[in-house]
Length: 327
Image (cartoon, rainbow, N blue to C red):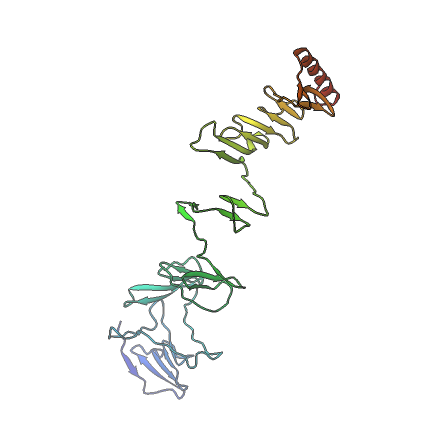
């Protein structure tokens, strides 16, 4: 759009205007204080340009390809109170271009996030590409630096080297370490995993919390699981299988009743599904009374015959009833 400018022969005593062909005095105004207004008759800065609508207010170009687009500078910029403001109106982004305006190299989003290589930063600094970090001696908490081949962060009291101990490898969403032992609470672990001055806490809300033990290729005979069976009233179990509740060897309920080969059901302290063998030289006692087994005096073992064993079993039953262990 072209505008024919004409001068006004009747210049104001306080301001001078250059009118356009329609008589608009705001085309160009020069105040008595030397301020120049474009699109306004009341400039508030040495140069103020007002543009209606979304048109570009000021555009500075350089015909020499090696020249600058625009250079801005304030006097003695380091002195408190001196500043230079560059910004946008409302919640709009600010872009910085190169290559004749063809490439947006840096973006300051309306919310304050800064993007380098991206026009949609989602964090305070969002970089689409690599970052090179140099060294520094500044001791501000959170400062990163690269020194002596190590990536370090200052934690408020000293520099911590992040690259030390980074031996973990990644396989998809999993990480693993197979070059040595892992210590928690110790810097000298004696096993693949050692926890020192603490304990291991397993939590799996809504599911079984368990540990599995196995050797070699998983088979029924070489794998055992131990933990809390969520689906069976949170009983503690040792099972000869992957899942708790299959081939249970030991079961303990919330009343501290124990089942061997079965879930405790009789109300007694111990339920056994299967025979019990008492080795030679040992016996079963109720209180201080031995009720079944072999008695050993010195090196001689006095074994009971069948009749004696039946008598002892009946005696055992009577004493268990007397102690309230069975009914």
